Image 1 (cartoon, rainbow, N blue to C red):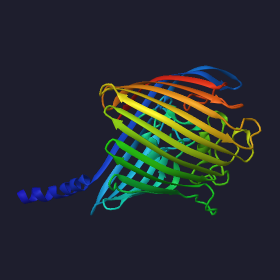
Image 2: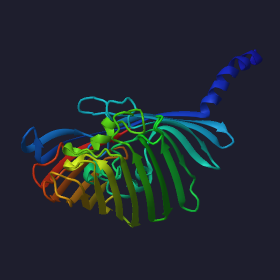
Image 3: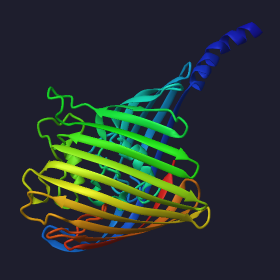
Image 4: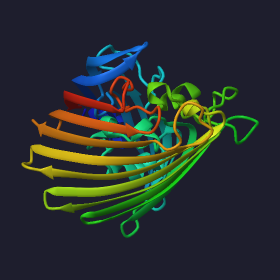
Length: 382
């Protein structure tokens, strides 16, 4: 009788053992709030705007993350991550089901991780987390003008293969290539490399990103969807170009309950139709100082200042040398590890003929050189 019972249990035990080697996690974040913007230009008029927001700091999302132990230090892994608007339930990222991330790959204990699919570049992975645009900081509203350096990951990269190394004496590195999926190999492709170093309170990172043909109308199945990539241009400016090059570095240092940091990025857009130019160029140099201070384990204050120095050629409508100054303040109170409330204030001033202030996530560009945004919200994670 005992033998019969044991034999009957063997299949169940085998299934249980197999499941023990595989994990699938459902996770997500919901960010909802209320925002006031003092000046938004729309349809030939302008005025203040009150609005309900979704993802003012962190984009609302849910996803599935899984891993399977293949033995010998090798694992299969995947991520499927959806973005959505909590205020109306609509899909984000140009109406994609898994618009934030969708990839599968292998991770080896001796060599690192290689993944394939729709993914982030190394500006997002290595450099942005050390800035005020980090997902653990101000993110959306603190982004540099037009998110010209992709710190706020306005675009993700389709058709990409990506390698991230193990950590060697505090260093890690990686590379990504996103295919054009076109007979013209260089039409709508992208590549990125990055390196990071961490040692106690010190963190340093640098990365490079190049995108070719993001303004393509003949190859919409490449690294970028033009409808998504050109949405970088807030307030009607479109930054999709023949060639985009961005190089950046970040550093931050923890001193007790305080964290201070600096980041610099340089972005070049060649063959852009933005700013009233005809096949012109646009250049942005972004300088940011940021800091956070934990008054208590639950209450954190943060601030950042960004100076963006621009230069535009072949423009027929605007000046050649725009400048933007932006100051950001933030307070976050955590009820628990999963749920918090926040308050933010952003002020931006633009200089240069024809240029206006345009704070990321504000609902539109200002009709003048100045814009002020104030928002309160709540986030919960699962």
